[in-house]
Image (cartoon, rainbow, N blue to C red; front, side):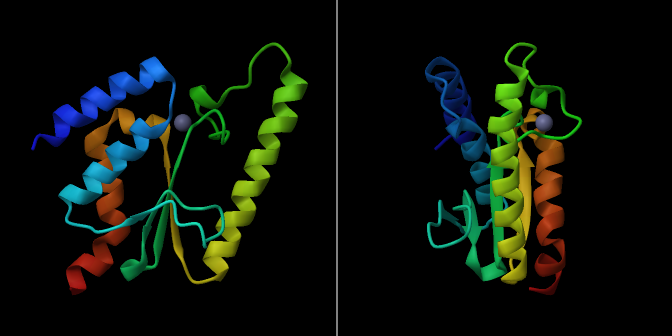
Length: 140
Ligand SMILES: [Zn+2]
């Protein structure tokens, strides 16, 4: 089984179809390689986190920079035309995200947001995910 080739292929496919599942798959494959087990799109949690590891009470969201308005990110920039419309629409997403993150954290969950632009540097992203669990890895 070659995960890298599969990833590459789905990345290409997603470009063609315009879906946003490829970033999620990349994060999943990194977690898989690190030896983590997870569940996907858990509906009974606020915001339906993309990846959930109950054992670590950790929820991961994989967010598109534009739709979730990644701050100070070039991919999160608003379009030059119809700016007011987009601002209203995207602010709604941002508010919902903040609300869901707060609900999760109040419920004792550790929450991690992986931004789509972070997928450009797989090594760095792997480190970010490792850091997320470092304390737990060293004690187990
Ligand atoms: Zn970004």
